[in-house]
Length: 78
Image 1 (spheres, rainbow, N blue to C red):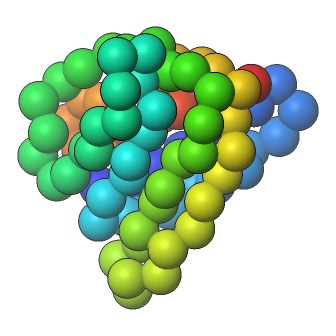
Image 2 (image 1 turned 60 degrees about the vertical axis):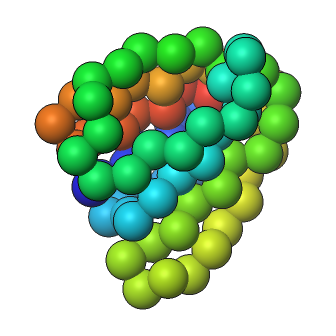
């Protein structure tokens, strides 16, 4: 899967991943390989990213939107 995390000021992350966990408006959820297409709003919290080398990174966001389609994830964050 490919993930891009974009803010109004910069691109925070771009790369291939195994998993991303996001703070959805109704709770945390994870996106893994071959996830069904989805668009969801996000609330304040931490985005957890595990890349293909199993390295974990965290990004703090104030909210945003995530779109998943055909193993491409775009996260627009504040």
